[in-house]
Image (tube, rainbow, N blue to C red; front, side, top):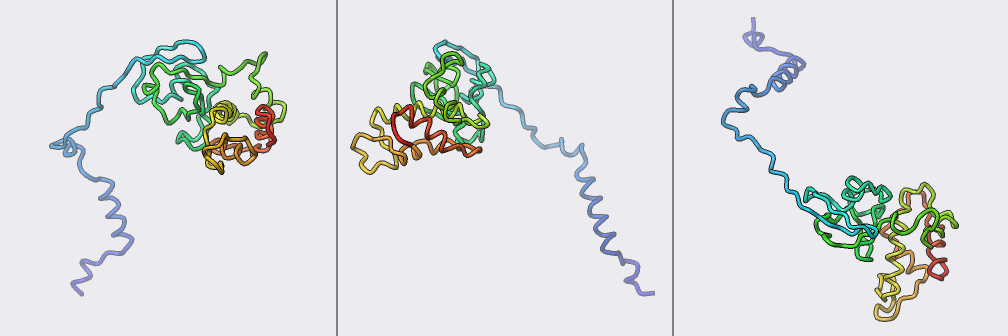
Length: 213
C-alpha cells in the first residue's frame, strides 16, 4: 500500500473540517481571560431650551440628539420629516432664527436659545401660510413627504432673496437678486421631491414671490 493513502483526504472533507474548526473558534472562557472588556461610556446629557413655534421648550437631552430628533421624538412635532438623515434630501428643513437649516445635521445643544419654526408654526388648516395655500392650489405636494421641508425652505429662500443673498445662479453677486426661474430652481435645489412635482412647486413659490417660475 502506498504510504500516501493514509494521508489522503478529499477536498470536500478538508472544507468540512475547516468549517467545523472555524465554527468552534476560540473557547468562550479564553475570550474573557486577559482581554479588556469595553465599557459603555457614561451618557452625556444637557438641558436645552429652544423657542419652538413661539413656545419655549426645555428638554434634558443626550448631547448627541439632533435638532430633528428633538423636534420629532421629544416634542412630537412630526410635521418635520426624516428623509435621508444625511442632509441631502432637505425633507427635514426648518427655520432656525429665520434661516433654513437641515435639522438632521445640527445638534439640539448647538441651538440653545434659538428660535425654531417648523411647518406647524407657519400656519394652520384654517389659516394657512401663503406658501401652504399656494402648494395646495398648484398641487405641489403630491405624496406630501417632502412638502414641509419644501415649504420651510421656500420661506427661508424668499427671505434670502429679500436680503440680497446671492446664489450660484447669480450673474452678478453684488446686484440685488431677482427671482428668475433659474434662480428659483438653484435656490431650491437642496430639496428633493421623489414624486417629481418640481414644476408645481416652482409655480406655487413663483406665485407667492410674484415671479414667473
